[in-house]
Image (cartoon, rainbow, N blue to C red; front, top):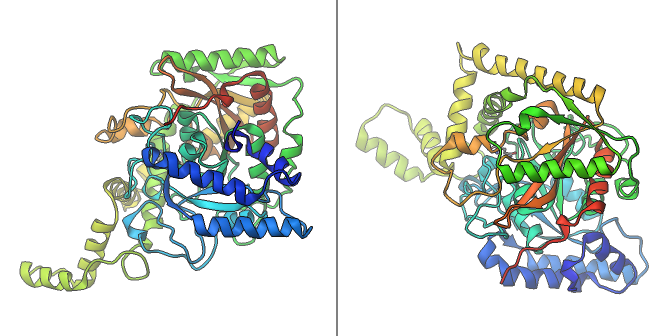
Length: 500
Ligand code: GLN
């Protein structure tokens, strides 16, 4: 078995035992990227030189007997939405094509202080808006299981690079499903932490009350390892919560006794693909055979999740994205063109307003523009109460559904998506169909609870199916332990796509 087929936890043990160097491991991944990323397109930028340098520094520290961080020597890929000091961070947008942040996101700082090696930056839907990575301004990403299909999104690059063995670990972000959905469609593990568990400092904001950074990996124990490094209070993010971080990587192997899992009947009603439903039902049976009790639960407001999310997220986005005005930073349209245009069309629009308008029309792609318009509309006078305020109320009801559910069950079990990975281009001209991808994932963000996606089967066409477990806030430890129980009893996580 080649080194890149081993899990991060196994690689870490070899590094610690002195049987592998970080330079060797990093080089093996760089070779793999060179070999297969031409057909996958997971990376926007591969940072080979700095990765090898970091790896050499860590190897030297190890040889000198210095103390090392928890991820010492392991390569990690980063979604291009996290600020990295003095290196490009594009957020998949033309708007930030030449942007080099003056500081590191806390999540990036944490990786660096854990002695991880940053391998490169992964592709994503522009400003994390999308479910297929087709909204990236730069390139599309192909699903490693079938390159005619999308990898999911918005963290499509993050999931595809892990699925295709181009990185053992990666960071994604999840505002309405963007870690869990691509993890499901690419057959890897992805965890959206509780809102507040991981600092959002330096995460380029999409919808601030929903955004969370989280890990993607091939296995549950690797996911636990990365979450342990990411989690924790950060005075730079006032919404991060001051709680101790459990030793997830230590406890993940302890099975849970007397586990009660809740099943929401609506999740299996019309609209779900039959093969996806079967795989998820079989996963529920696996838990039963492991001693879990299955209980049917009600989530009366879950059906309003999409409508609520697609008001709140665009409202927050319209406000967050107001800062890209061409004046402060990021893309700015050609000034001379603005003046020439105004002289020609004789409009009384001032040069400043025209500059804003042209900058934003040219810098943002069509989905981002759609969200800004939806959000601005829903927040405008006369509509605010009918849309935004109403959505906030329904959000509260959804949270109450979860609170009630978690009084009766430990975790909620169900599908991540209704369908396996769809064909490229299939939903690009139908925003509603694209939004429905998020049916089972957005409620966790609206309620602020944690969720994990793990591989639970394959369709007859060989496409991965994901299983979702959701926990009450700050119960990631339970979530990971329960996920590990399933992984120990099954082998879907160990199958690899065939790539030439
Ligand atoms: N697909 C959802 C959207 O387009 C979720 C995106 C996300 O989680 N970043 O908004």
